Image (cartoon, rainbow, N blue to C red; front, side):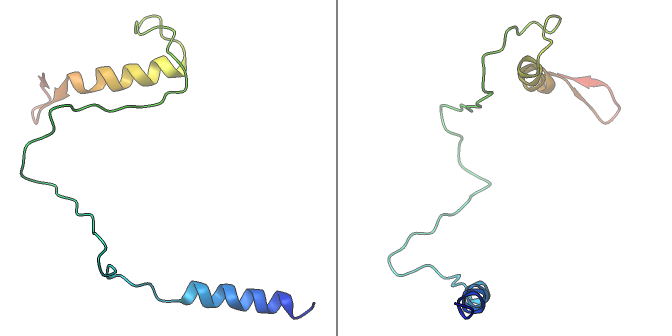
Length: 89
């Protein structure tokens, strides 16, 4: 029994030090990420699970975290500041 603990620790160390194979296996597919070119998809939808429905999307009445997070994501990109600190639509 006393030999089981050091043997288990040794096997964990050996498994952690094992080299990984960076090459894909034969017949496997590799996913590529392209950052340029092409046209975006027709439907551009993002789904976020806020956990609950917001009680209000009125900025004056929003006093909970869910409403505040949604309003920040909706209202934030509406106006940007340019290089001369003038608001840009």
